[in-house]
Length: 101
Image 1 (cartoon, helix red, strand yellow):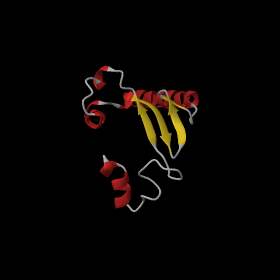
Image 2 (cartoon, one colour; image 1 turned 180 degrees about the vertical axis):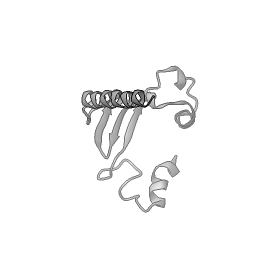
Image 3 (cartoon, helix red, strand yellow; image 1 turned 30 degrees about the horizontal axis):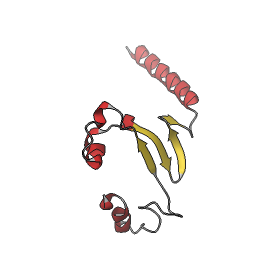
Image 4 (cartoon, one colour; image 1 turned 120 degrees about the vertical axis):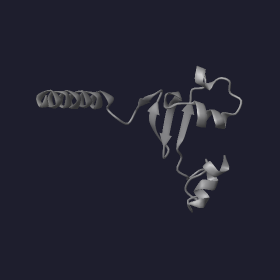
């Protein structure tokens, strides 16, 4: 566990800025939903995160102390605008492929 946190930061010479939860340090955090089938049985939380859990288990994300995902939804992005643009691009690609046939 230490090598993935403060030990890794120390190896990079960044332990004064990151690697542990302390006042003044940058913080990246996630909360994980463990009330799902792929989280059971939970004997070793570290192994469970590495080997069994998926991105869908992540509920909340804080990057550099700022909340960016809350309950699976991005709070810093306009998801409706992004989805509209994705649909637009998808139609454009489909039309382009259709014309080349």
